[in-house]
Image 1 (cartoon, rainbow, N blue to C red):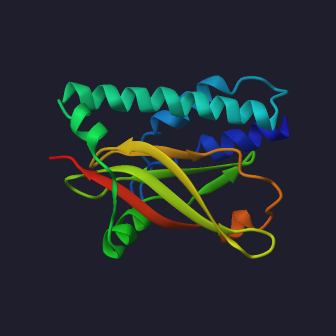
Image 2 (cartoon, rainbow, N blue to C red; image 1 turned 135 degrees about the horizontal axis):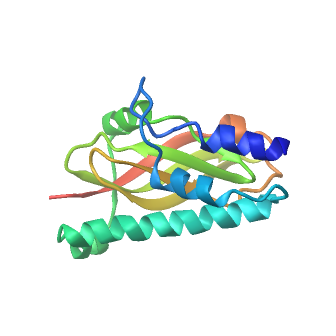
Length: 175
């Protein structure tokens, strides 16, 4: 029961709002809250639900792109890293990375006009202080928010939760 309360506190808090104000949850959080009903859920069960919600939300995002006539353009695009100024804009406009059940989630608010965020990288360290980069892909159109999931992050790296930082963001043009 304590695990379930913690989950609702983590995933039910509305992470995806604009800075300084609460707003609607991302598709991922809405989906996850609806599916997190078992009282005896395991970490693997949570990761499985997270993966399913990520996939459902990405399908919805792709459908929105198709409706706008952008699906082929975005599919053909090789995402490019943003410069340091844009990286800082997105980081400051989005909440922190959340680590739970051997997974990271990051609710990204896309404050970059004309750019669709396609991939993010989180940098951290192993127990031997070697650098590790964890990557997640997704679709976040300008002015929207979405959750990136980095799943199955080993629990063998206790410092992972405190040393993680946003390393890079990759985008495609939306025009």
